[in-house]
Structures are given as C-alpha cells and as structure tokens.
Length: 170
Image (cartoon, rainbow, N blue to C red; front, side):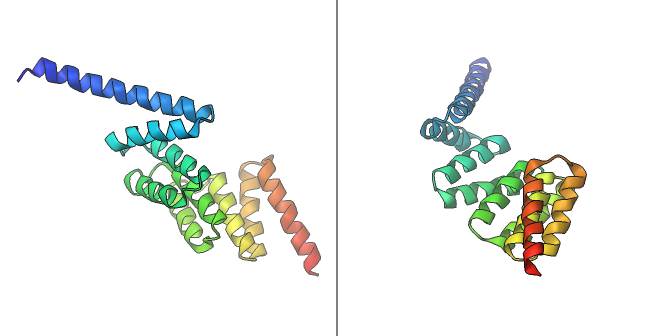
C-alpha cells in the first residue's frame, strides 16, 4: 500500500467531483436541465452534504415536475444543513404551490428561527395567510417585509392585492 498513491487518488477524486459540480452549475445556468440533473446527481451520490448542490437539484426536480424528489431533497438538506436558509425559502414556496399551506407554514417558522428577518420567508408566510383567507395576518406579515425592504416590488404587489381584498369586503 502506497500512501502517496492513496493521496493522489483522493486528490483526483476531489478534482473530479469539483469539475462535475462546476459542470452542473454551468448546465443549470444555461438551461440544460437534463445534463445538470446528471451532474448534480453524480455529485450528490458522492457528497450529500452540499446544500447548494442539493437545493439546486431540488429546484430542477421541481421544474421537471419531479415533486416527490424535490420534497425529499429539500427535507434531506434541511435535516443535514439546517442553517442553509435557501432550502426553507424554496421548500416553503413549493409547498405553497402544492397548496400544502400548514406544512409550508411549519417550514417557514423553522426557517425564521434561523433568520427572523428573511424577507422571502416572511413574504411566503404572508402568502400562506393570504391563501388561507387570513388577510389581516397576511397584511401584518407583508408590512414586515416592507419595513425591511421598502422598495421590494413583490411585497408591494401582495400589499396591493390585500388592499383590494379589504376594500371589496365592505
């Protein structure tokens, strides 16, 4: 057994893995989603602890209508890298689209424990309340986002929708 040879194999393995991840990112950016999936899946099979890779792959799964795979990957990422806030944002958005509002709210609340001022999570929370017809709560949350980012276009649109709802309730 040659320790030098083992070190070279280990180094080559990490170089190959890094090249594969770089290729996945390029393919993803260029819209070559099928190729990106292959690259991300290869990387993931060797290293499941990279939250960027996992979340990017989950986003592609979502785009490809592989919802169960996306959910599984988001949950894996949250379990293994709980500090990676983008997983909470993207997963709660997916759950919103699936109309799983209570589960989305649970994920949002967990994410807000990590970053209580994350505008994307607060906006998603506002949307959960909006879809549950809890307009007062929705407005309260969206106003929090506007305090943090007064010129946030998406938050302003939601606020306009809420004001329309309020004005037409009377």
